[in-house]
Amino acid sequence: MTSNGGLSCLVLAFTSVFLCHLLTCAQSGRAAFLLGLPALSCLGYAAYRKVQSSAVVCALERGEVLEQADYLYSCAETEKLYQLLVQYKDSNDAEFLWRLARASRDLSLLPNIEAGQKKQLTFEAFEYVKKALEKDDLCSAAHKWYAVCLSDVGDYEGVKVKIGNSYIIRDHLERAIELNPKDATSIHILGYWCFAFAELPWYQRKVAAVIFSSPPESTYEEALAFFLKAEEVDPNFYSKNLLMLGKTYLAMKDKEKALLWLTKTKEYPAHTLEDKEVHNEAVDLLKKLG
Image (cartoon, rainbow, N blue to C red; front, side):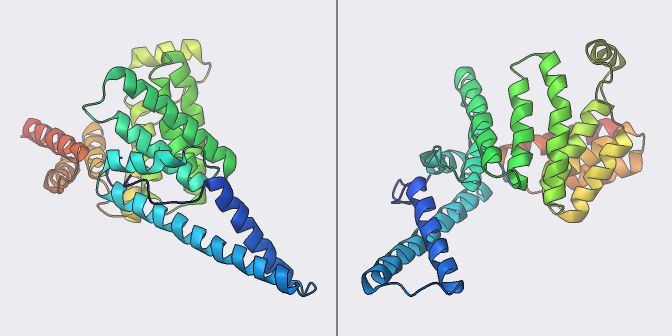
C-alpha cells in the first residue's frame, strides 16, 4: 500500500456527463452492427463514425487521467493528486469518485492541515465514496474506502456511533475482499479492525456491552491471520502491515516472531511520512524488547 494523497487542469477537455453519453453512443453503435441491423445512411454513418471516434478519444483521456492519478498516489503527491481529481467531483464514474475520496482523506491527514479543514475533508471524502458505491456496488475499492471513510467520520460522531459503525465497516471490508481477494490493503485493514477489538480494555468492553447487546469482538489470532494473508498476497506491500505483525506477535507473547517482524519494519525503506512514523514506532518497540 503506497502512501496516501492534479496536475494541470488541461487533462480532460470533456465533462464526465459528455463522456458517458459518447461511450453509450459508441457501445450502441457497435451493438447495432453486431446484431446485423440495417446499414446506416451515408450521413448517419458519418455521424456515427464521428461519435465513435470522439468516444475513443474520451475513453483514452479517462484512462490517462486514472493512470496519472495512480502515478501521483504512488509518489505520495497528495496535494497534486487532490487537485487533479477534485475536477471530477460531480462525475458519475465510481473510479474517479473513490480515488477522490481517498485523496481527500489523505489530504486531511497531512500535518499542515488545520482542524476545521481536516473535518471538512473527512466528511467530503465520505460523501464521494458513498456516491462511488451508489454508482458501482461491485467496485471493490469503493467498498474498501467506504469502510475507511466511515471509520474516519465516526471520530466526529461519538463512541456510540463509532462502535455501531464497526459492524458496517467489517461488512464492507469483507465485501471488498470478496470482490478482489488479491487486494492486500483490504485484508490488512480487516486485520487492523480485528486487532483494535482484540486489544479493547475490559472496561471499554463493559461500556460497549451496555450500549449494544453483542458488541464487536475479535482475537489477536484472527488479526494475525489477516496480516499474514495480506503479506502472502503482496509481500512487503506496506510498512504498517509489517509493524502490525510485530505488534500482534508481541500481544500474543511470541517475542521471537515479534522481533523478526519489527526488525523487518525498521529496515523497510521510509518513502512517506507514515513510513517514517512506523519506522520510529518499530525502533521504540525493539528498544523495549532489548
